[in-house]
Amino acid sequence: MDESVIREMTRVAEDCDAVNLAQGFPEFPVAETVLDAAHRALREGRHRYTRTWGDPRLRAEVARFLATRWDLRFDPETEVVITCGASEAIVAALLALLAPGDIAVVPEPIYENYLPGIRLAGAEPAILSIDPFTGRWDPGALERELSRARVMILNTPANPIGKVWSREELEEIARMFERSDAVLITDETYAFITDPQQTHVPPATVGSLAPRTVTIVSFSKTYGVTVSKQESDWSIFLDLGNTINVEPGAIDVIDTQLLENVRTIDVPGGIHNIYVMPDGAHVIAGSIGGRRLTVLDTTTDEEVWAWEGEAIRPVAFNTKPDGSVDKLFIQVSGHHGFVVFDWDTRREIDRIMLPDVPPEDRYDSHYNGAPAHGIGVAPDGETLWSTSRMNSYVYVYSIPELELVASIPTGTDPDWITFTPDSRLAYVANAVSNTVSVIDMETYQEVTRIPVGKGPKRNGIIRLPDNSH
Image (cartoon, rainbow, N blue to C red; front, side, top):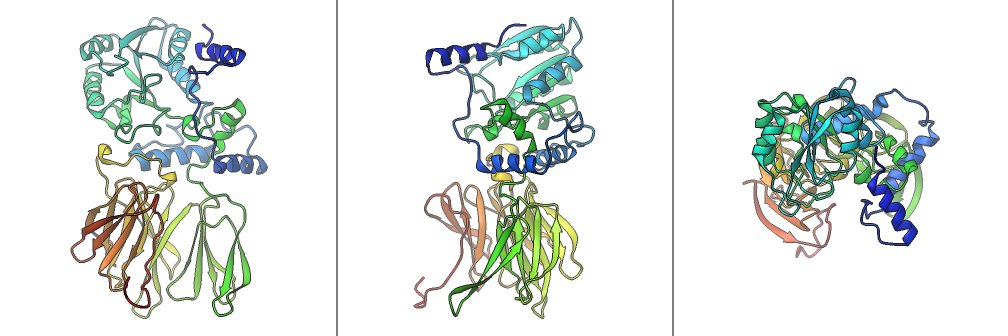
């Protein structure tokens, strides 16, 4: 086995105080939420041996994330394995699939760990040349190699040339695999670090590749946890849906006559959003890190109900004719839609998935774990509106049937939504395109798109006393 060229060049660069172009360090720091999650996991005792194929909670989160993000369906008990980095997963897959004398196809330029892994299995590499400047390759050459190969490794987005394999290219490869007995091993370490114009397409989502693909993804580059082995180990404790800490939160109550903070109510889990329910009798606190929705009585400050297990995002309500609360509509991390609760019984009665669009039409950001992050009931109570950050659409559902009645394109990455009191206009904050979409609520058409400052997310409506704005 050869010494790692990357590590060798890193050692030389450090000795010579040179700029190191050999090793790919993310240029952004590790997020405080990641560090907090690591510290929290250590304090909670989650630092002991776990199952050989990974902590069950983490495998379940990975499976849920892949299903929500890419519609890749895996059984977390039998089809998801956690390894110490993508490199271990690649070598494990090669050792499992290759026998001495087998052929493994590898596109070149090449990430250095592939060839040692192939040699360790006693197999032989077959190189598929990729033009490093144009990304072009020879389909005929690949078809010839696949006719005799047991495995193909596909790195997309590719290290070191940055090539993002297009859907058209993957469809061509899928057709070749239908005529081959080979298995595809994908290395998708850089899936979330791409140009917005060249979004990542998981090969397993293309054609008939899914049942013959070993999909390998990684936390390290996405979360910037490559600085040391210690940080890499910590990253496995990351809860994919958690972006807010789980330290105890609190609600401050302000007297609007005295303009004073009159009391503080402690609430489990760091609070992300807070809502007063339409009946005025209850207040809701939603926690992302604590994965908890807490309902308090506004008179006694006592907890009257809690829903645990999901990271809470925006919440909306509809009411009965007498003004009492009927349903809760809750958006949660990792779910492209919303959960419906009956308030009287405190039971989940439905889980709505928003419509899908072709992967090439999606806005391929990381969404911070929330593909849907804006929801509201129109003031007239007849429709429920939900934004999709993944699709850059607003979807409108009838109440009480919850049937889809309109799909409205917006600016990129729509977040919160608000309405004029007369249910005439809806306003949607588009966080990435730095705009606000104004939508006619009768025709379901975007009237205009207003340029605003950087990163609009929350919005609200207030009419000035002179009725001018």
